[in-house]
Amino acid sequence: MFMNKNIINIGVPSKGRLKIDTLNIFKKKNLKIYSERGERDLFGFIKKSNIKIIYLHARECIEQLSLGNIDIGFSGIDLLKESEINIQKKIKIFKKYEFGKANLVLAIPDPWIDVQTLLDLDEVADEFKKKKKKLLRVATKYPNLTRQFLYSKGVTQFQLVKSLGSTEVAPFTGTAEIISDITSTGTTLKANNLRVLKDGEILKSQACLMISKLSSRKSGIKKIINLLSKK
Image (cartoon, rainbow, N blue to C red; front, side, top):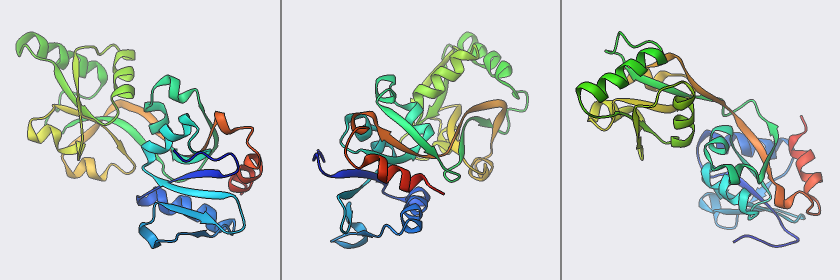
């Protein structure tokens, strides 16, 4: 896709706070990124260098790193850990940053006053199966991490529902009973009358600089990684 032996391809998140904070790293290192077609350009470059910038969705950064189509990428730990094991094995986290911090959590509707912990949730899930003859539904964009977490805590009677939009609304549109979602402040959850289970933290995430193991010996990689990761 982007491969060229002499070019170092760097994947940068294409939108949001993650993009702004990642671009600030380049600014601090006096690495000015130029784009031929303005702000909406999906490609950029650094003059007098062999560095090419590719703006990608943070999830796509992970996939392209595993394929070796980009050599260096900026994304979140949550998205790396959500990916398949064979993808994770091809990527190395080189540096963790103090931005992009968020937690993946299990949240339930406020009216469920008797449900405070995963043990309570397990009882509710069993009741759903016995009395309502259906499985408790969990809406999420993180099915792998959510499944692993619930199974590890002994909660097995549930069904995952893939969320494509705002996960927080799922319990109020009848799509699911509870959700698993990423949150940094908890404000959006509160605004939607949801609360995190007391022991419902699945994963702590933050932004990282990652490298493709397929590119680790590529000429010039070490130099640019060291420059980007220096304080």
